[in-house]
Image (cartoon, rainbow, N blue to C red; front, top):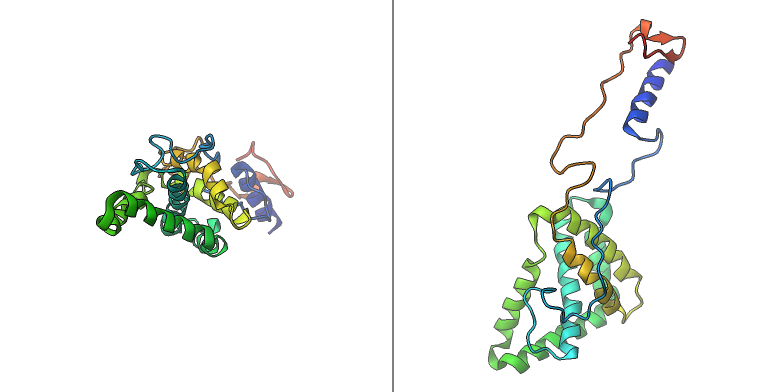
Amino acid sequence: MRRIKTAFAGIAAMLGLAMGSPASAQIFFFPPEHQGQPVSGAEPGLFVPAMTNGQPADIRANLVWNLRSSLNVAALNCQFWPSAMSVDNYNAILTHHADELNAAYEGLKSYFRRTVGRRWQSTMDEYTTTMYQSYVRVGSQRSFCHAAADIARDALARPKGQLHITAQNRMREMRNSLVSYADAIMLYHEPVPLPPILRLEDRCWRGDSYNSRRC
């Protein structure tokens, strides 16, 4: 039994794992760096669809609602990574920042009522649907989920009334994460190479020490 434990310890060492402690839950060996500069929400190409002729209050409402939309997509599409807690964190954000989110929604309603008149409801529905769809990218799912998990934690840490600060500071990163990213070590959908299993014949041992020269 002692020899077997020694053999397993050797395998773990080759894999770079620590015996007795679980590997940290993550989806990258080397996480992507998608950070970007703070935004106002009016930058060209930042959001899809683009808001036209928006006033400062409209732009801020659109910025906050894009953050909510992206985190909603993460709650739906990142459940393959349980430790990200995408659903729990999203629901907690809805509760913690309810007043600011309601204000953002009312801000969007005011914008569409002012700009399209009677057609505001259908136009707003089409607009927000396209907004949600802009955060769905199959090839960049892992990098998007990685960014969304960190941004959700940032949002939860903000006091009530300051969700827009997270949106200003992190939405460029959220948008950048929609670019497909291949891990520098573990390639996407590629098998992980494993070392050969150690041989356990008696001739491979000297007492309790494994002799790699003999095997």
